[in-house]
Image 1: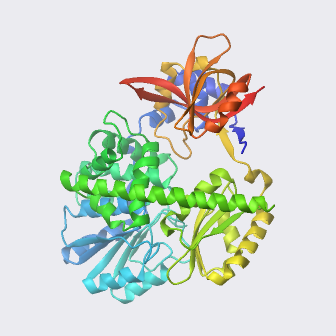
Image 2: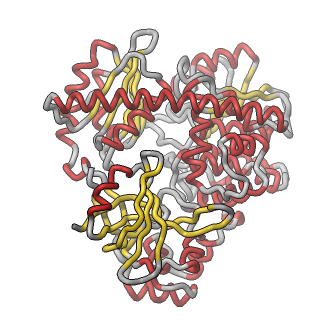
Image 3: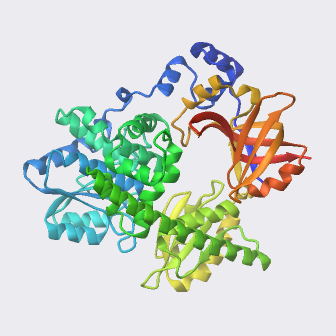
Length: 571
């Protein structure tokens, strides 16, 4: 599909020039900073040098005093404490952080990760009953629980207190927990609202350290876990998240914990590679997630809290094998899904939404299949499979900013359960409701969606010439990292380039060189997954490229290259 290139607004020239003078950079870089809301010397200093001293006081978070006090009481009274977390990357890193840290000060605690397939997301009754049987009287729930009103009440009736540490949007009723930590609560005045679930766990431990005069550097040893959660959960890379990610990457690149180092090596990453957020998003995160998708996420926690290299290496190899298994299932299932869409189109059916069901698709990869389908057919997508009890479960993903959750709300009478947000959701329905749901969901999407939401777009920072990409320019550009939502890697467009020496790599990717006008300056270009553009590239008079600039390590040397996001041809 042809993509729209949407250019960001250009800030006022006077403010760009003032910033350029204040921090001694060229206007192009000042423009990029201004687009990110950075207009003064002090703002630029905070952006380029994130400082741990700028982290907020954890006791500003509603419920923090009560949460720390309850943990201290449990320790004094020798109660059993259970650290409970979700089965994804955010949940498992949060459990590894809180459990791993508190274990150094208190031994009568354990951790629990629900089984994705038997217990589902969030707090489970199975877990509460198990906690009661084992004699736990305090549960610290991480990355979940903010909507578990009835289950927290059930636990309270059994004599179990809950401390909820969540970052999801609360419902109208807050669970009756002993303490609830969630900056998104309407009456919580904590200054930063976008922490990951592991980030909330970090703030809890930070408060515990302050209350008990524990050196902050002991907590900072866990920063590598926090940055993995920030990357994988795709939270905004601003404010505290940027500070935590910046220092977490330093920890990860210099002295990572044993388990993460083993996982990095198992993933085949070279020692000389400086890990970035995208390495965590596309390589480390999926491996941790794969365990919860295919087996039980407790194995991921075991890896993350491991102190023994041999044990960690063994765990990492197993996790890598599980990820390969997940990838194979993902590829096969995605092919089946794409074929189903193609078949429906051949029958003349052009829909605004995709709803697909196959009884033997693996529950753990439904969200991945949905995302892959959207890459090819850009529309809200729901992928469903059948569970042992005959019910259908599914994962939904949106496209173009369409409010998926509202569309599901309008189908609520056909669903047994659903939950999520505007961009992603999960749902459960009776098998007999499938056809009615397909029709209703298509009808509602068609009524609500805008035409432009069905066309993929790329946000572009600005147009530049190749000659502007100098080593000094890139050296400063690198310092814009860590990249993520609200601080994405800058995207440029350069027009009327001459493409030379095109070749297809591994039957999927495209590689070539570009130059502009009569300049001798050339850049190597890599276009992942764009081998289908080969013929058009060889026939075009010139090409316009939408891209980011990156560093590539080849045979021990670093050089700049262009990573393509999209191409448009001039004939």
